[in-house]
Length: 146
Picture 1 (cartoon, one colour):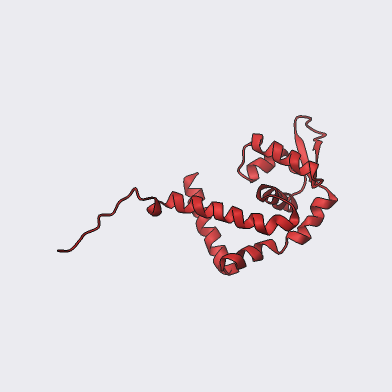
Picture 2 (cartoon, rainbow, N blue to C red):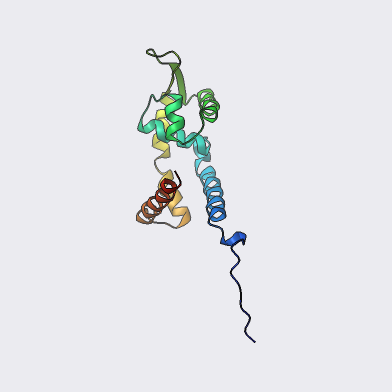
């Protein structure tokens, strides 16, 4: 007598959401290891990446670029300021707006961070081309959810 296995749509191991969640946690953990020598956290690294691309953004622009809440971004920037990576200044045109600028220390950290992306790809055994394909697929999923 053959044993048939019914597909169970509620098995944890079959959930895309859990696969993405657990992978995201593992990625964050690996980045923490890679960023230890830079003495920044993963969220601080993402913020630095954004500022290296476009220095002087407002706190709200940073939050939007990183898809964070403003209430989450402000304490993150404050911690980075205490580390000497950024400074905050009121916008001269609009006093309500606070701009975030890299300090010399924050700018110089870019040279140390340049190897992080390739080190991550190496750590997970993915080529640059494979990484670009994965990024494109993940962006498609994200965009469909918006």
